[in-house]
Length: 182
Length: 116
Image 1 (spheres, chains in turn blue, brown):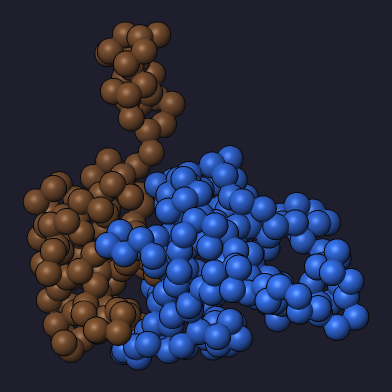
Image 2: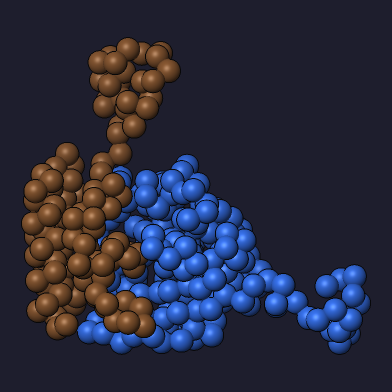
């Protein structure tokens, strides 16, 4: 459930999702497409749809969010491991225009981070259009640091803390929460 | 490197793609990033874009798919061209698959590998 009460189903993307992805892309505004693809983009080609959905779920993973009401795609987050640095992966997050500002991007990024940790990835990198304030805010909220500012682009990096380091030390109780519920 | 150097890098990549039979041309939309639009020779209806931009703490320049995935460093344009072609080649459709099966013998266990 998102912070406005709306519900989505978040799951891994599979090759059968190409039509869902094409539909989601077609509903993006021109600005959202440009922010995501850094260049003007009218449609996704069959090759691109295959590339974005035929995943190995190890070096290339994507999580999609579906509207609980009508089943349409409303958001997607993906990582693609660097070919020359297996500890790092490029990420991108896209949210349908009418679903932006509800916390869906943060939810997808958190779950994508969990998946990445499971696959041994230690840091995310993100190349973002300089004008993309929404994703810049999302990344800052995820403790990303700005590593490079170039003409038209910004690059951010997020260190992924291993899951065991995120847990409280043994014997430390979270206030008001019985241990068995954690 | 400057924006003009980035364009020069895209030009070098375009030459590598041309040598492999692909179409590639530089596009410079007003106020937006300069990109290399690339086209599979077997799919003239579709274009995808590649940009050149600095990446990482070192600031080395990289080729990137426009969906913000790094392809490779600009000092290795031939390798980048191979990555682009692998990613963007038109998927084999049913007609191609049928033709391939007819050519190589339907039902043989190695046909699928040949068609891939």
